[in-house]
Length: 637
Image (spheres, rainbow, N blue to C red):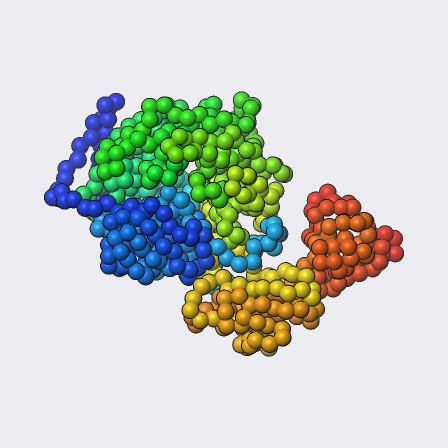
């Protein structure tokens, strides 16, 4: 049974609020996170979190790496050592202790082995769909935002969907096992009208993820600890909500857009069960989206917002006193926009360190008022000290995509967050940037066009292999479903025939044993002329042979099997000396492809004059490829 909602009301323009404190006030030392290292690591790696006021008993510190909880190995008042959990997501690290919560300024990035030089058509598998219940009137539902959070404390992230029709938050239990994604209904939370928006976070300091969304009465939240639904009134019609601790008091505050104005709502809770929020300020009228971003890494989240009419973007500096009142600079900093036409508006704003310089950058998706979509733009954070500045917008290039629906996640585990788009189909651009220099590959698409339009896209590991799946939430005309593309990056090791190659375990532990399956079952490998490092994190394969194509490998780490890796051979066309297929100098492996080779051709022209057989062929659109009369190209897979 769901308890009766809690209510906090605002009246008129003065935004008067009434609340009652039922518990005795007591001083609690506020924990803080000043840094963590490393900022990117594999599952099982040890991360050191540095800060203040941690509990010296490890179990009394609840640490989340995005969607899931981590194991705390040791603790002092200023340092926590924790093990990176499976299912970690590209989000800040949070620490909850003594009813207070602190969040890192930067996001943790989950790394894994096997990143290719670019995304391939084989990087993701066929979709696994999770279908929401149909609308009671017989039509399909309307799925808005989709999030992930471990709602039942089993170490796996559940899927959470904001469904507009019927108006509910649906929570789906994660039953997935390695290589097998599976979900089943867990429970749902009825709302009046939720408008398809939600976010998750610990808003009452109990170390458990809560659900925050929109309701026609203002904000709606579901508390994991009590199973209760709460409603918090707002100063108008709310269209956007985010969370952050704006005054570093250990309580999670709200950032909302209501009737086009940006407001903060200070969390004044005194216990983990009694809600109270206080309206603290308004920034601007005419806004569409607002997001917290700690621009200068001072532990006080600033705010970036976009104008819903002009498309202009502003950053407002947080001038709050830690533990005191929430306040912001009177005027904002307008970011220089490289989009010059007057018919586009910002559709979403995402935050991430895109160039690896330790500062959060701003990624904006766009759409046109008359229909259609513009490519995403990125503002690099060039702030020095407390002087906030951003570089002019850099517009992503390549084949046009609908970028309305945008997200950031490190899909290939190389330590650089990639950009995901999912409005009409699943697409991503690989991050090739270096500090101070943005560089992204063209978008690659998977899974074909959606039946309609998706309204949400995220990347999150769902089966525990340490690799984020590509997840999109259906919208208008897209039925009421969540579409999941399994991440297959690294499942196939593609190297030149005859070369040496290295396979990684994906997860970190104390003991390692590599195994091989040549078609007759799994057997343990031992060091010899062909293999070295058979009981370490990295397996070295020496002088690969054509007959090994298709061999499967896995590493048993502390008794647990890691992801399966299949050995294949790849050769990419370079055209270094001519257009002749038969010249070895035109190929990356300096050999002509054979029947065991996966061939990649990104540029041309290419002329094949002799009949040949290859395993697969991936050729970029528009490349000139000629097979002369009398010659044949046979592709076996």
